[in-house]
Amino acid sequence: MACWVVVCWVIACWVARMDVQQEPLPEESQTFSAWNPGIEPDLPAELLPLETIHRAENVTSCLAEVVELAEWTGIPMQELVVFRPERLALHELIVRINADVVVQEAIEEEDLGKHFRNIVSEVMDNYIQPREDEIVEAYQELRTRASEAVLGVLDTSLFASDEPEAPSRSLLDRYFRRRDRRPHRIESTLEKTYRVLRQYKESGLKAQDPFLAAIYKALYKVLGTIAVSRGYIGVEKSLLAKLVTDRVCNLYGSQIVGQIIAPAVRDAIDREGYTRSKVAEKPIVISLKGASAAGKSSLRPMLTKMIGQLGIAMDGYTTISPDIWRRLLLDYSSLGANYKYAGRLTSHEVSAVDTKLDQYIRDKALVDGSIPHLLLDRFRFDSFSSEKIGRILLDTYLKFADTMYLYFVVTPPEATVERGWERGLNRGRYKAVEDFLGHSVEAYEGMPRILFKWLAHDKPKLKYQFLDNSVPKGTFPKTIAYGDRETLTIVDLPAFLNIERYQKINVSAKSPEAVYLDSRAQVDGYSVKLLKRCLSAIPKVDFLDEATGQVFLRAENGVLKVRDRSRLTGLAQNSILGDVLSELDPKIVPTSSARQKQDL
Image (cartoon, rainbow, N blue to C red; front, side, top):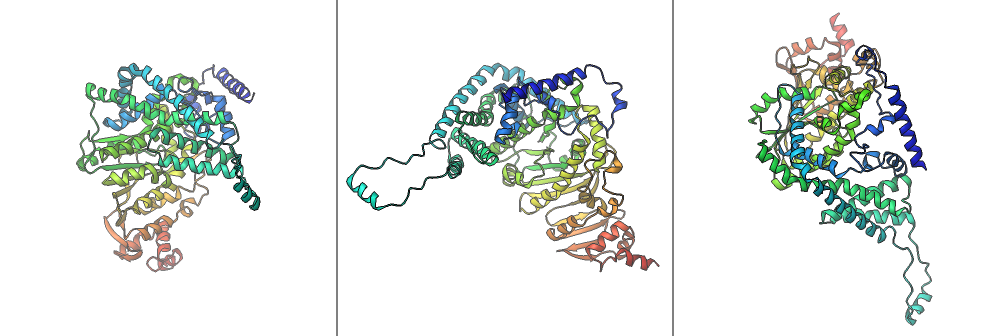
């Protein structure tokens, strides 16, 4: 009954919204703007059926059931959908073209996406679709096999009888049992649940057979989430088996589909003359980090000269930019008046494919013994998480990369709102103001975590730059700071301090003026926490005068030493810079009140 209630509610909301949208919006370009984009931070409930992970042509799951199951199990909705085998084939094709084929940059940043999508579409039409029956048949066989295996494991573990073994009827046994009057302790349901979950985890880690490993890992993940969310698992064995089987088919099933299409992809690469990605002897990984609409993608074509100076040919590196997949997953023109939600409607599926790409690159590296040169252009909710990095990505890069180049793109949060609006007008991918500002906070909080995570490792070799992208589009950003594990050179100290200031903004702002929390945010927002941590973690930190290119202050092992007193005094007249340096060491730079007395 609850399922049908949800169905009726979703349909009613959708129909009502579509009825309202029959009339065209009057002069939308004049009605909406960067700070009033006409899009909400959260996807309206009535638009859920339009999300790619809920469309009937992509999944076999029912949206109403997914909504109900998410509430009952505590499992996120995006993990409860069941992709069709044909959709899994598209996922695996995107992964393989991205990892195995070189798609070159061009003058315009959007050209990369156009070229990539053309290749995927060509391979799908001519090489993958002819094998569709084979893909579907293999998927159905896996589903049947997985369902039987899951039910078998549940019967012998979670749903095994708790009745004690029948007592022996021998005379001696009865005699000794009478003397041993200790009561038989029965395992509680909760104890049994967590014992079984531990067994699933251990079995999944030990299993040599990929199929069995997938079964146990899915059991542990699904049942563990339910136990944590509800406090118990319950007795709905058939439903539990279905949920676990669904997960096995989404993840392990995708790998099976990938194995089926792999020969076809290799054949396409050879026949169509695509440039095959090659592993590098000393792999270089270039990673662009910044907020959404900070200008990372615009920076990619401008990095080609630098990449060439590293000895890498134009067709010698692989670019990973998940945003270019979106139009393969959704026909934007089908959305009508809902076109502004195109980005949001594809986000969960993009994330699912991105995770598969990480796994594929790691597995391929284990076989090849190396990775290609990589240019990573990503913004995703775990890309600033040191915990996530410590799993697949860190394993891959620490083991195989020779040198890591990190480019931290620093763009004022209010500018990302303006740039994001322009991006929407030009490319059809919009976001709410609150999303842009919230992503900025996440990015600027995450940048120090990423920096110090890599500083803490001996390898790969590390080079990094902080870039000020508050420059006109098409202009290479200004350098804020650059360094490695031994040395940091700060060229623009106020811009470097912005990394912390941009963490303290009003994400609910409706105008540029409201982004900073109060009128003194330009001064009070500056903090030296990040700077002090750099002085502690990096053996040598140089403060460079941008005008002369000379070092006026140096910190060695955290101890400040003046290199150019006259220049330091002149620069310290700037109230912000002076106060910051005073906080580092008032003996070297007087406080603002002391400086005022000196001026008198």
